[in-house]
Every structure is written in C-alpha cells, then in structure tokens.
Image (tube, rainbow, N blue to C red; front, side):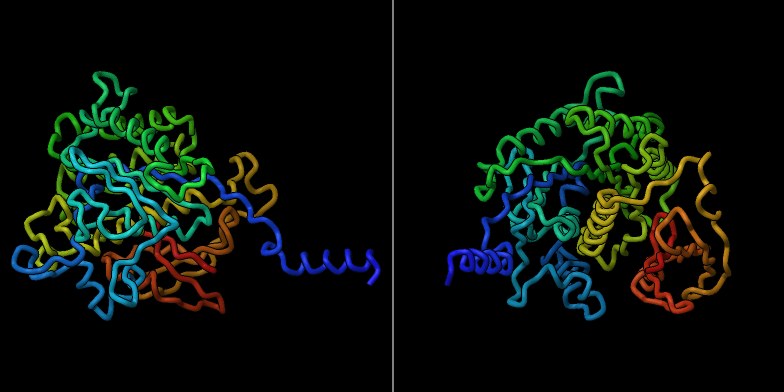
Length: 405
C-alpha cells in the first residue's frame, strides 16, 4: 500500500476509535462543597440500629429499604449484596471535635458517632451533586453540635467577637484543600474549585428568642458574605436548609427563626445564587422514628435526613445549572408577550392555573393552594399527568410550581 494511503487509513482508524486511541484528557478540578451547621448537619439519622433503645428499628434506613412503598426512593444506598453503597467519585471529609478524622468515599458513617450506623444530609446531597458532575466531588463537613450563629458561628461583619466556630470552619476548609493528596491518595493534583456552601442550622439560636432570633437574618447574611470574601468567591452558590426540628408548623420563636432563614435567602443581592430550602414537610412522627425523645434531632428519622439532603442537593444543582436570564424591567415586553393566563384545571384535587411564562423555560403551572401534606406533595411530585398532550410533574416545595416538560 502506498505510504500516503497508509497514513490516511491510520488517520481514519484513529478518528473512528475516538478518545480510546488518544491520550486521556487530564482530570478537571475537584468540585468542593462545604456543609456547615450544628448537630443536624453532624448527622443523627439512624441507619440500621434496632432494639428498645432505637424504638425497635422504626424509621431507620433499614426499615425504609424493607418498605415496598418507600424502598425505591433509597434503593441506591444499598448494593444487591446488602452492603452500603460506596461512591468513589464523591469524597467526604469530616473532622469531628476531639475525635479522629473521617475521610473517604461517600457512604454511611460520616456522622459524629463514627461507625457505620448513622448519617446526615451529606449522604443524599453527595449522590445528587455526584450525579450532576463528571468531575470528582469533595464534601467538607464543618458541623458541631450545640453551636449558635449569634455567638459560636458569629461572622466578622456582625461585629463583636468573631465566633470561634466561624474561625474553625474557615480553617478546616483551608486545611481540607491543603491536604487533598494526604486525605485522598487518588487525588491527581488536578486542582480544586469551591463550588457551593450548604447551611443547615438553627436550634441554638431558637432557644434565645430575645437576642439570637431577631438578629438571625442579619447574621446569616453576614455569614454568607464573609465566607464568600474569605474564599474570593463573590457569587458562591448557597443553599439554606430550613430548621426542621420536630414540627411541620413550628410555634412562636421557632416560626420566627424559620422566617428569618427564608428572609436572608430572599435578599435582592442574593438573587440567583442563594436559595432557601423548606424542610418542614420532611418531619416524621416520633412514634415512627428510632429516637422518639430527640425532637431537636428530627427523632433520628432516616427518611427525614435523606429528604433534607435530597432537597439541599437538588437546590444546589439548580443554582449550578445555567438559567435563562431575566430581562431588566424596562426591557420586558419588547421581544416577548406578557405572561398570559390560559385556564384553570384540577391537579390531584388541587386547583392549578396554566400560564405562558416567557421568562421561564417552556410552560409552567402554578398550583393554588399547594398540597398541604408531605404525602400529597410526594404524590403530586411523583405522578406524571398529561394535559393537552404535554406531560408535567413535580411540585416544588418552595414555589409550589409544577413544571411542564
């Protein structure tokens, strides 16, 4: 065969083989997420403990997996052989106070107790962001029980003494980034990128309704701004998990604290990069949970913690996903028609209004009122309806929006 023909043939073979015939692309920087808060973020969910000390195993992850209705939601957390799933593309680092460092691939056990019997929001959060990225993901947990925002996590911009756990949080994130190769030998010196911050907190401020609750919104705004300043990430995506506790509808000061969390996220300057994540509908009854007397820890209920991590992760992904930018107010209506109400109809017994939303993707349907219970929300979220040939699903807990696809 002539030399020129051989060269052409080899070139065609290389093109046909694609990436396998060429050197592998260098790995991209590790996506780093900071998960901060107090004992709820530490991880109180019970995986598989039973007996009288754990209400005979009610409300554990094992119980969920044995429930034919709920098992599909969590089946990815256990292998076919019955072992807890280990996810190598998501790493977790958790430096517990006065205890050995926990560092390794995502699985059950990155909780304050160690061992393989507890977990926190990091578990499902890690699965959600891990599914979103092709890059390696690292979750850095900086959580300590019984710590307030008004004092322990107090950010510099709030004035007064900087909280020792704010300082500790920043130091541990820097330490985690500096020790990637030591903690995770698989790290290939590809660099890292701080990709997001998740805050799940509130109890210790709630017990101080005269001072801590009134200033919670301001302190949380300052915390977000100061963390962004520390790491030179002015638009760092942030999700704020609503204080869960033992209530769907919280009383008095606890309701005020929840409102303060939502108000911080709703600040105009945070538009597009901070989201409040409602969690109240994830509360499960004490009698159906492994720790019935631990209301401040959501009764240790595995479903509650799974759903919190799931919601935090999905909201974080929403912030990380490029969205259609909204036009300035003075430009609206120049290119596109105003939103037009089409008609109302029933969705799972709830009145909905179909609207043409030019600033959102495709169509959207706003439900009024939103399904009032968690089970109703779940049913609406999981069921696919068909209206005029367009299937749609999902009730968004914070905006009561059903999206058309």
